[in-house]
Image (tube, rainbow, N blue to C red):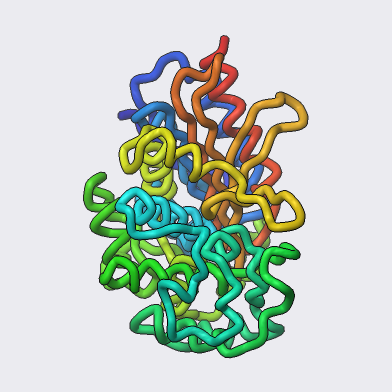
Length: 365
């Protein structure tokens, strides 16, 4: 492992593996991450191919005030990337014969209000159930609470009216995935976090991906609302508790950890090919198609024509973006790329495809 450090009002820490074919891609990736550091106080990124992490890098600061540089072991809030983990848990329950997404959610949660009798599980997965999203100021209010379990987390919204007839419209909602987290807990007979840990993290020996507020988060970065790269000054975000968000946005971890998790998924480590195809394939609404699969998007690039799966996450103090490419005629193995940052800003979203393309170009050429 070679460690390269460069200081230009920034601290850049890059880790290289023995994949000589990716030397050009790594160089381009470093430049891209450095450019993004004008927008983000701290960044961490990773790319995986096949079964391996082929590049990981950290740029900027984990703690601006104390000039603590970010390194790839630092943990960031994933926010809505967490939904892709919930999707994995749902597919696993299907594989275990415990879940049918065509059934009403009340089949599994009979205590829910009567309005949910028309909500199928698939409506929750693809955001067509009519469950509302956060109201103005509500995100911050919830972020001052602590939820010991998923039942306490759904109390915020479960008695509210649905916003439309299930299946007839599409409206993105994190609360829908909090309800799915509760569904997973009730069907499995385990706490949601425990089910994820036992079935996905423990088999991969991933120890740096946890629910927010976990006692095991020993290297979490500081989060910010303002950043001046020229003066190296930042305004720290308010401290929040994301325990009530569960699989809708409650995980924290390293870039490498979530890349490893998605590589394992793409390599059929958790379910077979048929269910993996189901995980990645957009679930249509009752009236219109959607691009939303099991907690991850299902898209086709307008420039390359290549199919890809992606998700973003952003809220107070953090941003994240994930992209997954399945194997195809010119890409023999799955490729996964992730960028994490410690301020809310969408600039990284437009760069994740470019980051992945550096490595895909090396593979194809």
